[in-house]
Image (cartoon, rainbow, N blue to C red):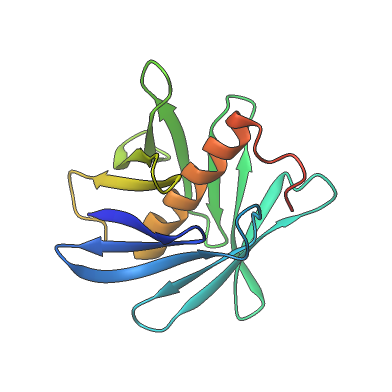
Length: 159
């Protein structure tokens, strides 16, 4: 599975050449984004509050999940149905991201590849068991981008 930038604001998630969904940012320096799945479902992602420390995920105006960075430097993804997942940076220079369930079982690994000529990221995505929740995979990509931006200081003035 891979996610490839199509332009400065969009990433397409593909598996063996089949488009599974797309992550589309409102602008290059914005945390506001949308997710569009192949079954025509769409979701809106946006920061909430003065400091934007919580990011909500909504479908048809109803919040279905949120993302928050915790004190351990991990991003916690909480769905309204009670499911929680944690995105952790791994590696010597925190160059990989692991999405785990509450039992600390690795579900998906995101390996960002920076493209200097286009100045964007693509992701190689690996897993032991193929994920059936494409929304969760796309939110993992969003959370990885959020982590990279927050650690690089690129979020100053974002909203």
